[in-house]
Amino acid sequence: MKPWRRIFTYLVALPNDLLVGWPAVLLVWLFWGEHLRWEEEALVCQLKPGSWPTRSWYRIKVGGKYVKHADGTWQTWGGTTLGHAVFYGPGRTLGGAPEFYLPLQRHEHVHVEQCEVVMTQSFLTGAFAWLASAPWWAGLAIWTTGYIMMGVTGWLVAWLRGEDPYRGSTHEESAYSQMG
Image 1 (spheres, rainbow, N blue to C red):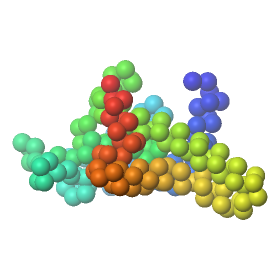
Image 2 (cartoon, helix red, strand yellow):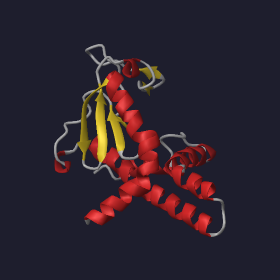
Image 3 (tube, rainbow, N blue to C red):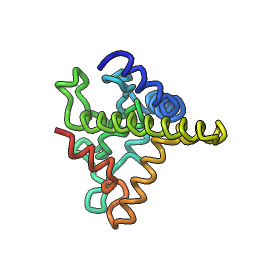
Image 4 (cartoon, rainbow, N blue to C red):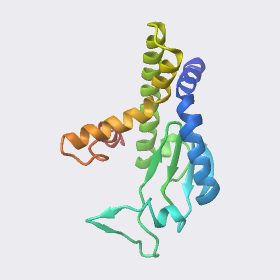
């Protein structure tokens, strides 16, 4: 990708990255994480085994029950993407170059691309609203909430279709289908 294009995608995603993504990953890394690094275009870290999130809200249920590994640690979600920011469950990545990424890493990087797309859309929508005489703050609000609205509306539509709000959302289905 040409440098100016990469810069543009970072600039349009900047509100989400500054307000949500990077602070969240830095907070997770500071209190419960390890291995803070850049993975392509995203700031990433990994949760420590046995950390509070892995014992509480980051556990997953299989068949209605939380699952423990043989070593006594809980089965966790694979990863979470918040724009150009990702945190992974314990032991879920190998790091390294993109050609050596695990399917999970490719999945999370699909979400990074989705963020760039929706933030570009919300930037253009906000700019057009402002140019059409909407107050500047309305255009800014449209732009800054783009990624959050993608998640919320995706979960809502999946739920309205009778699917699991998370797994049935179109952005999650798309990322799973592109894992490679």
